[in-house]
Length: 94
Image (cartoon, rainbow, N blue to C red; front, side, top):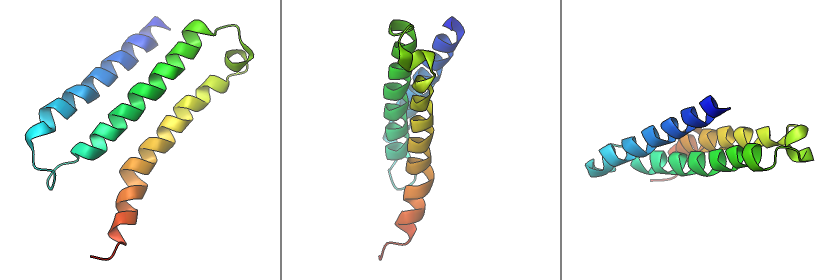
């Protein structure tokens, strides 16, 4: 479990670092807004996921595995932000 917490922390730090690196690139040529929203969603949902494992270990929520739905929700958020929204935007009238 400690390895998972360290891995998530390093991955979130890498996302935040990439947002920092890309901050001066013109928005027309970059995906800053998309990357910022993905980073925010990942940090929030991973924090809730890890907190439920650390602090609510013996509750029915963790025992029955419902905490894993936070990761499913994270994947759906990332899918929405990086795939569905850009495809939907291509159908907008100029």
